[in-house]
Picture: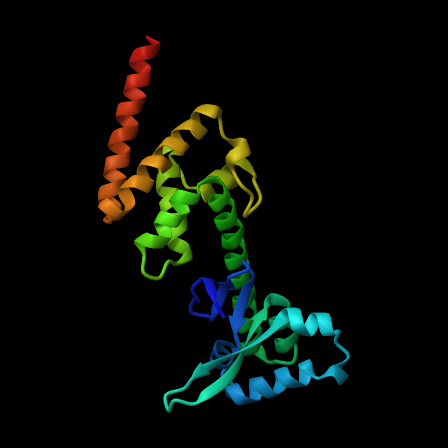
Length: 226
């Protein structure tokens, strides 16, 4: 299954349709179960006699294959949050509860990131593309780091800190809460950073350059207004 965002350490990724999914092999590993037993449970869930609708089964469990170390083609499933939740309902015990909580947190993080990525792609397609090109395997933090660098330069804080200080819910876009001047500065730095990313791959070097440009830009505006 094609990945829009690569897997994290829990096997959660975003597929090409921007849906957060989890690899059944990772679920087996994290919950300390044999993958064949997890596969058997999933097949029971997918049995037409299970009582689940065909729509639920098809939309939440995607069958795919991998090649093992001996060159054999073997099946595994990529599940949505709902598919994963249904699967692990039967996993009991203190440790299983801790793993479930950890997965819920990671799913939330991935889904929030997908929303942010979708928003940034619509608003700054070239910037998003450059971040993808600048990293062999782009991770969620590559995108958030780049945006937060610009937010910190203009706002003096990350997007998360801005949300907390202004009572904005997690994952909500902060643009409507910014001034026209702040939006103008952010947009200008994003355009510059888009051009710098491949020519100047070092993050700290780019940050220093953007900070220098921003200060010069502010000084110029100040002189023009006096």
